[in-house]
Image (cartoon, rainbow, N blue to C red):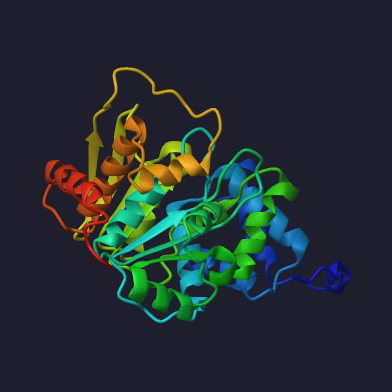
Length: 335
């Protein structure tokens, strides 16, 4: 990124127009249209924007909340600058939040699907928040390698039907922008758009959001990006994980058609949270050495949503039944 501000004393920087559109006061400002969003984000990804402009741009978006057109433009600009070849991927699973109160049960949903031959690509960013566990460290604890290249992804899918790719491998620029959270004190639209990248054009996508207001914008953006099968939920801790203690509204796309579906609350009262996230206990549940009532409900229900989204089943009742069978037989099949 370029910080030489004094180069533009006599002429306007080409990116200034996009900051101006967003920041022209209460009556003069507006959202970017798709073309503007695409052009602006392309400039950012190519390193053609000054740091001070990037900070202003991201925070102006944050204050007003990004529109569907903006989100779609940003994601498409990112996709067009990635050089990944499409792979035979059944499900793209984004994981950017980390977990604090409950174990990352969603991870065992994904790994169970992989054990049964579904190709799953998960991508995310490892954080450094105290008392929060991130997907990358948990996978390493379970002896899964972290991919560092497109070739690694290909190889892992062939060997075990599951691959995890960190955001800094997908796009170092986006990864650096996510790290700006500690500089700005606020999350930026990058947290939102990273979940929608779907780098290998998987047949189906899953995204979780933390703030319910983002559910519809994610669904609409996925639709505008041409994704045919997708699900967005307010997941436990911001990850794509069904919380059995609450109703779960799914904003989805099924064979190119938008839909909404609500899954009921499953527990009579709120389940206790973990005092600490001891990964040894988590691994024992995965290996079938111990049981965990809340965890196994979350695993099966989350997997059910994934199965429905992948078009493996026709309805959610079937999805949950199949998920239970897959969980109980996860080690019956050789990879």
